[in-house]
Image (cartoon, rainbow, N blue to C red):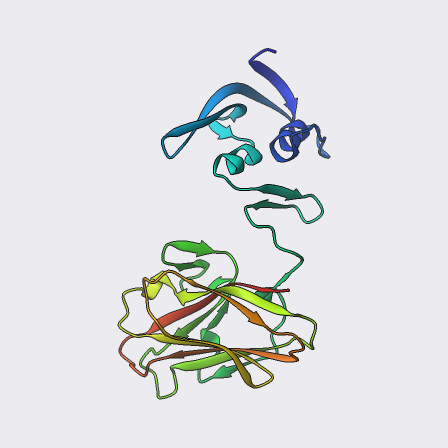
Length: 240
């Protein structure tokens, strides 16, 4: 086989990268690419050599090979256009993708979904790990008493059995001397509670049984220290 091949159909590139077989996409766009034998080093150890695509100076490596080199499983779901590296979860819905029932707190606009609105578009980040989904709460900013508490409710109507995610302090306020609390309530009953959440700590992974829950509440609270605001985050909140 020749090392260099020009004019490959884009669908071939996509199909080879994702499935290991030829799949044509709905396009006739042609790309001039180079196939190179590339050595893959994982933590300084060579684990494989694989033919990979080089295009415009960028290396496009087979995802499955990279995952396997890291000791992880790889699965691609063509229906949802989702690539899974490592653990594959069942069908779920992101909590921040469904409409909330109500927000409570002195300043309701301090609840943010998917990213911070101020600074605009800033992604949630906990201990260096960035998240593309989540609910963020800005607390205690020296405005008035009670500014350290807010919450958001959802009408789940008993449709889900489990809520998972990660909780922590956003890196934007990682140096704050304040601490936070996140509580998950179902139909008014406390199902989960984490106190003393501090900036710089690795996110805590949670899994909460919400079987039969009609109304879910995510409650955020900061210590009543109005001179040190803190941004709490419930990241990757998934309903199963």
